[in-house]
Structure formats: structure tokens, C-alpha cells
Length: 401
Ligand code: AMP
Image (tube, rainbow, N blue to C red; front, side, top):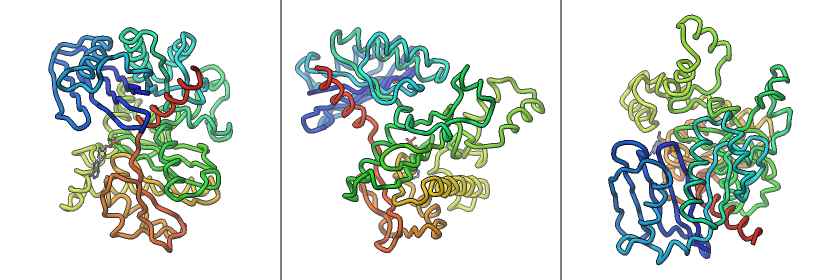
């Protein structure tokens, strides 16, 4: 079965075409600047040259039609006909409490996703645009939705509730939902396979650290706790997001600086984190370069980032009463030797011991960076959210045939 995985944002559509007989990627690409002056389609067929096309693409239906045109193009295409695509999988950020796993798209499923717009106003509406656009371009082809929140629906009430008046949970669904669930689930499964141990027996801390970042305590294969909350602002210090702070800071600063709701929201989401402390960049490469050059602001940003990450690892080891495996993934987790080194250097009380040489190797494959003596396995596992969505789509379409 060939299937298309789509990740639709408000002005972009990312895609990957899979052949599920061997889970190979036939082509992938990105449409950017949808609705703006000149939209850009970048298409990369496996084994062929990448092509880029600039044209006016005003909305998502046209964007997906252009993608399908590329997939069947004589030069850069990989299919003889669009009819070869037998299913479509979509990434959806928020599944609320309704979706505890991926689901086949029906009218009712789309209505549920719409009802969740309040909880993810920036992310869920474009996902529905993506679904509708795929339906229009490929009528009758089954579609599946995979939610970033679904993996975390196993959290217990004592974990997901905030200690604020309960009526806010009842009226407005205020609780912890988490994010990056597809990635946390994927890397925890790969970790168990790599170690050749049953997932059910393992206590794993998965560190998905990229521009956004979250940690999950995966106990026996299920999410027991995760650091992102009602929104992706809670938890770790991130590229431009503050992560945890005293909630009173918000009202205090709003009062002192006379900030509106949207201004304070923008401050915490777009002007905080590494960017705010370094004063120069939200990118960990710039931060570590600055630190190597002796920039005190970059050094402070790095130290705060590492300290806060390490505190979370410690709290999840406490939450699970131990930890067998720590997994690093996403942009920083997969690439930053120094972040992994400094975090693990200070986890000796857990028996963590990282081999500095293994830590330096770059391979793009799952690998161990801990020593044979380490009491905790430390792994670097490249995440692959698209493959996870493709697998779910394949399974659900098979089950519903
Ligand atoms: P992501 O959001 O997963 O794409 O991760 C993006 C972040 O990964 C960037 O903002 C960088 O800070 C970080 N990153 C990517 N490559 C490297 C690298 N070689 N060393 C350190 N950080 C990196």
C-alpha cells in the first residue's frame, strides 16, 4: 500500500509518500508561504534531484493538488497515477480527551477536531484545512488522523490535573495534555527494540528536545507524565518559550508593563527561552558556539537550559521510582554532543555514565552512548513522527477494510 502523510500548518504543508511494503519513502517535500505572494514547493523524490517551484498558491486544496501533480510528474514523479495512493495520514496537534489514539476520518471525527479549536487555535484549524483539501483532491481515499496528545491520554488524574478550582477542568477542560506524543511513543518503542527488552518492563525517560521540547516518563510503554501542559509552553526552557515559571510572574509583569493578553502570550512564547537569555539566538548551535567563544550571555543561556532539563530528568526518575533508559531525540537531542554530555555528567547519582567517544559519533541510526558499566542505558534515537503516522494509517485502514 502506498500512502501519503500530510502535516498541514497555517501557511505550509509538509508531505511524505510511503510504500508500506517496506516502509520506504518514495518522495517528500514542503509547500511554504501558502496564501502569500509567491508560494514555494520543494519536492524531493528518493534517488532523484530535488525540484523547487515558485507559484501563487492561495489555499491548501491547491497546495495538495500541486503536490499530487509533482508525484505523477514525468520528470520528478514517483507514481504513474494518483489512484495509487490508497490512504492519507494527517498530523493533528490536539486530540483533547476524546482521541486516545489515531482514528479514521469521519464527519463526526472532523466535528470533534473542530470542537477542539479552542485548545489549539493555531494548530487544529490548519489540520482540518489539510483534511478537507486531501478529501477534495482524492475523493473516496480513506484518511486517518494521528494526534500529538493521544499518547499522553494514559496519564492519571493526579498527574494531569492542575491544583486550581476543579470547575475550570469541568467547564473549560483545563488540564495537562502534553505534546510530541507521536515522537515519545516512537522513540520509546525503538529503544526497547534496540535493547531487545520488553517495553512493558522498562522505565524510560524520553527527551524530545528541538526548538520546542518536552520530556516524557514512559513506564511499561505508556506515558505516565509529560512536561508540556495545557499548551506547549509548560516544562523545559525552549528556543523562544519560557517553560516553567511562577504563574504569578505573568500577572505581575502584565501589571508593571501594562501588557495585554496577546502581548504577554507573545513574550512567553516568542521572546523568552534561549533567545531571551542569550540576547542573540534561539538556536542551540549559536548558543554552544557563543559559549565556546566565551560569550557570558550564551553561557548563562546554556547553563539554565541544561540545569532545567536535568531537574526534569531527576523528577521523572522520582515519578517512576527509577529509570532504565534515557533517550535523546529531535534537533538538539540528536545533534548536540555538549548538551548530552553536560546533562549526563551531572546524573552520577542515578548511575549514568556516558562514553565521551560514543557520544561524539554521528550516525543517523539509533545508538547507545552509555558505557557498559552505566546503570542507565543512554540512547540517541532519531525521531520519525511521519513513519509512526504512516504505520497507524496503514493499520487503521487495514482494520476498516
Ligand atoms: P527541531 O525543532 O527538532 O528541528 O530542532 C531544531 C533545533 O535543533 C535547532 O534550533 C538547533 O538548536 C538544534 N540543532 C540542530 N542541529 C544541531 C547541532 N548540530 N548542534 C546543536 N544543536 C542543533
